[in-house]
Length: 339
Image 1 (cartoon, rainbow, N blue to C red):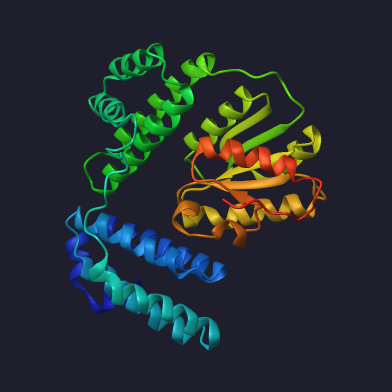
Image 2 (cartoon, rainbow, N blue to C red):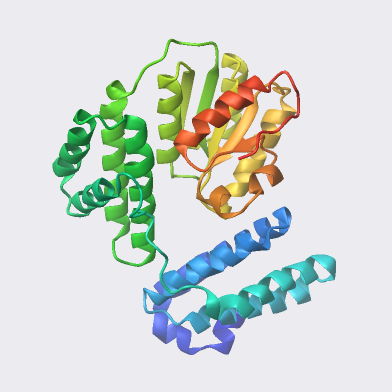
């Protein structure tokens, strides 16, 4: 950051003290994501991040040249401070990101697929939330359930795409963080109301622990999975967002967890995901199968293997089937279930 401001003294006037602090935070995110991409040997993780950042900057009227300059200076500093094979690999990731920068889209596509069976409901639901009309959002969903729509389908075709679309709208600078949180909180409230409408199976022997690692805040997906598994007869312990590793390992031993589900959204979550998985493995709880999910695992193929998990799933509904396969494979230690 010092070198960036030395080369661009106009930044102090253009962005002020608040901009300097934000710049420091952004550079930290750049390095953390690069480190995780290197650790996973997954350059697409860094490329996706830079492409995401380009959209954020364009829609906030920040020059994209600033990001490119920052990346190039990162490369110089790594060459000078680290050197060797590690620096060479980092350089190749950064150079690829700079080379492909212009080809990254300026606008991401909508997450609400117009061909999905409940696309109209998903759009109407989202518009109600964006208008701060939680009652209308509830009425729309309740009416659909009364007409025979399964709650599982509400989760898959309404809640999940609507939540992802909320994230896209924030990325595009169309909504604020407060609006994003309102939409998420409203969806979670409605999920709680719909629990009674889920088809219930007899209670079985399997125990699931659903969590987000320390620092992670996106818990809607793992909550959906927890409630779906509970309706399928599983005993469920759902801890929500930002749960310390030591507490989770203790719970696994206390309740003899069959499947641990971990949700992560960004590369910033991956160190804690790795830490949790290593802690569980190191505790001797080898019979506990581990499933990961969330945006970052959907975007980077095979990333779930590289963090040491046994399986991954693209959404909460498909994760139910993956969980059943994991407990069926428990007699074969080390066997992994494809996403």
